Amino acid sequence: MHKLVIVVTGLLLFAATGPALHAADQAPAPAPVGTWSLSNRIPGEGVQLSLSYRKGSSRSEWSSTQPLSDLQGLTASQLHAMHTAVAFSLRRDAGSFACEGTLTLGAGRGQFRFTPDPSYAAKLAALGYESIGEDVHPLMMLAWRDVSVAYASNVKKAGLRVAETADLVRLLDHGVDLDFIRALGAAGYAGLTADDVTNFRDHGIDGDYLRGLKASGASDWSVDEIVKLHDHGVDPDYVARIRSAGYGELTVDQIIRLHDHGVD
Image (cartoon, rainbow, N blue to C red):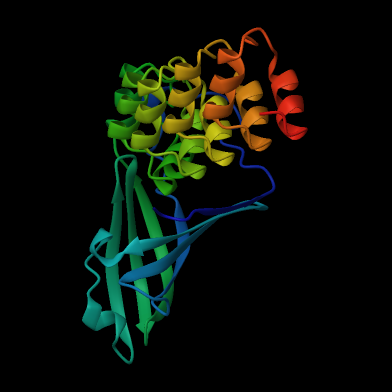
């Protein structure tokens, strides 16, 4: 799983200023140009790739450990060279980053140019997500996070109530993969929001825990109540024992109180 580090300063203002022009009179927007840096001084076969982009007084930076195979055109021999010029690309569904520069003993830097995929926004819209339009900057942000069409589609198929690409970004930034989402649905928790899923993920609540709660007869508790129960160390077996003892109407807070006082 890639580790994402996002740093954003200032505000990125994507709206054009001045009078609106007819599409036929508008020149194509220039591809965004930023800088990249790379380091191979980490264990394993991956490289630490960072991309930085400035727009006015604002700066965005993304950093991730990438497998060498994802950086098309970059070879292991170049990484270990004393000094060499390089040109490689990182391709995502939302677009591609074409990078040029130099490497010296596994570390280097240079410039990148982002080219959006012309069909990506339409594919997400067809899945029911909000219209992105043709503005290249939000597309670049989605490419940075590697928000794929397959991921967006499977999130919908899993029954999550998401409609914004920001929801997809939030899920990925919290390390939520499709297996985790499917496990929640298999446990009987459909119709969750991105906030619900990330809440479960951040608190270590998985499909097994939720399946156990369902089996205990607790099927109407909110996400916040389940998180509170889990954070107090109350497992599904404890809930099942309490309910089988004739205390099926107890609230989450009452169950937690019994657990905290050692009642078993």
